[in-house]
Image 1 (cartoon, rainbow, N blue to C red):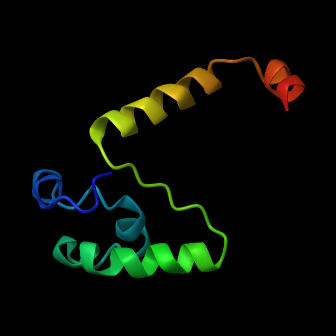
Image 2: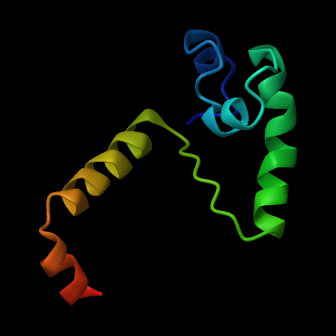
Length: 81
């Protein structure tokens, strides 16, 4: 989340760029923000989901929605789809 924020990058020591970190674990965290636009573009070109949230509240909202979805019994989820 907040991939354009220098403050969050420093506070999280680069952990706000998890996609890039997991793709290139040996890359120093100082360089993750440099490769992020390239990784995002490649994901778009290949139809791969690249989830990034612009704020802490967006991230928490998505997390709560995901937890709510996980709390529904599997048979109910299948019926909804």
